[in-house]
Image 1: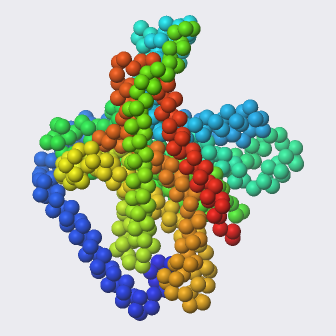
Image 2 (image 1 turned 90 degrees about the vertical axis):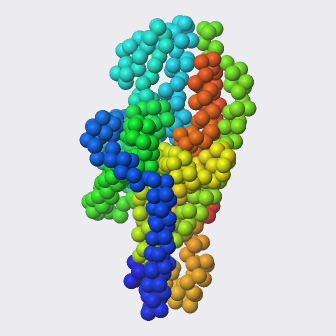
Image 3 (image 1 turned 180 degrees about the vertical axis):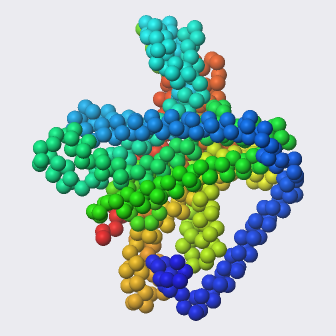
Length: 332
Length: 233
């Protein structure tokens, strides 16, 4: 970047090169200064004591706490991903329906769940059934409630005891993740289908395909290729958001690593936080790398100038900020 | 059926209305401060990431990769428990004030990474020919930045910045984990009361409407602004 012209900087001449070298040295010193200050502060508070770090080289700690936590994180993320993709496909296509009585309710559901914070949705699933089920149990719907829990919701671990429903933290986290990320994915699907050039649908209709065939055989296969990077970045968001289970005491990676370890090992909060962060960053960067690979592949396999899901040039759709990908998708 | 109407009794909700409003006020205060600070952090970061100095570029890229791939819950917990409590880096001796500023810092540090990426892709939407034309008519670096590049880049990032702002407003609820009392904390405290049984549905409706009042107009405003300011190319 530094050797050639770009939008901001012309190719540097001898004076600019000299100036850049000075800036490099100055900024390197400044960065080292900040790092040194941080290390000094950590050492001052005795954060480099061996006993604070040693738990993380004991197999027992990994076996009993971190790995089960990681397993719970991945389990919740996997189930929520599958259900959210399903939710997104159904509602995204429903929003494209020709019938207003399908399109408008689907749009309302998607917009509602996108406007509410994920944590509030998790609270909704975790606290609400427990609070309202005793009242419903007394009403004519009591029998229906009991049967629906026993025959359907029990597969998610929901229990009913003398009319009071208890939702396990796992189910609450999955519910929140599915509703929120499913709504965002619905927007991704809708934008993906809309990004296929109009001529494709027109050509498909003209050779006699019906609505179903046009969508299934022509639009969706092309849309899925364009949507792939956006979908994977949304799944990174989903994986990160499982950490919200911490707040309702779901035993995921953050809960296991940051809540369970420190009280047992000399209150090593900073060390535990760093180890957990490294695990999250490794998983997410692997997933993001996958998104980049998929994007490159889909760009190569499409001969026509396809509109990508991102803002065009520049960075791939930012994984992380959920609404970003949907908004850039909507403008596609 | 008379019992079911109990579920929609808004009495308990309005009995605690002051508390809930206080929670929303805390959410708004956190959002406003974080919006400003994250814009500042994002701008500084993007100036690092596009600078001709390799060290600064590496620092910017590392920061964005770390913060973007760490769960916000962990970022805020590290701020409140790690930096504030363990390292005793306090903004003030008053716990309310110091936890508020740590929540602002954590949320802005996290959001700043996304702001940086949005701004960077905004700069990338400006065609190289624009910069070349500016240089060829003799504009200096700052003149071309001020008159040619930034006006176009800024217009392109309005919509993404709006989405980031909305996501940030929703993310303020995560500060509940980091000892800052806002809407989600108030809600959890109310739901933990054994006496607060019949008010649960109205409470959810109220909180949902509250957040929709914050996020939906923001979305409409930025959508309108982005369309109005769009660069015709």
